[in-house]
Amino acid sequence: MKCRLPVSISIIVLIPYHQSVSPVHNQSTRRSIMGADPRTALISDSIRIIPDFPKAGIMFQDVTTILLDPVAFKHTVDMLHERYQGTKIDVVAGFEARGLIFGAPLAIALGCAFVPLRKPGKLPGDVLSADYVTEYSTDRIEMHVGAVRQGQRVLLVDDLIATGGTLRAGVELVQKAGGKVVEAACIIELPELKGREKLEGLPLFVLVEKEGL
Image 1 (cartoon, helix red, strand yellow):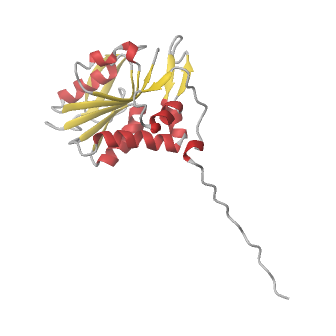
Image 2 (cartoon, helix red, strand yellow):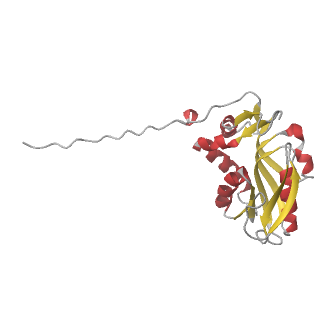
Image 3 (tube, rainbow, N blue to C red):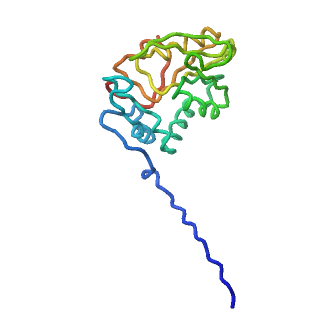
């Protein structure tokens, strides 16, 4: 009698684009500024809103939920890459904390250096620093001395622009190092807070606008 070994069958399920796994969405007040591109809608819908964080009255835009949807995460990096592909960017500088998440893969895609802009006490070497005011706090951002060199063209990346204070501090740091900020890129903009005005004409690229705070 011949002994038959059990057969193992693997089933691969392909998830269509419009059925991709994603977190709970909130679409009530968010709109895309690039409505012609269907990728932006998925990115927008993947952002979670958390009321009263980090203090009462703040409607916190949580972009970490984009990371739970690999399709939305890829679209975010892809759209930033498409914006800057072929341009002369020497350095992508990402802000702690969420700007680091999106800035680092963008730098890899562009084939350029990545520089982290971090809160005080996080960088071990000599640093340059700049103070700034956000919509709910006063803080400082730091960058290693020598991370950006004289004449280098720098792209600033953060998750959100509200009052513009964080990005303005990033511009100050790059200028202290002798670099030139050519543009800033964010996933979300809160236009009612008029953060663009603080950038004093610096070009700003965003994927999603959000009304209100």
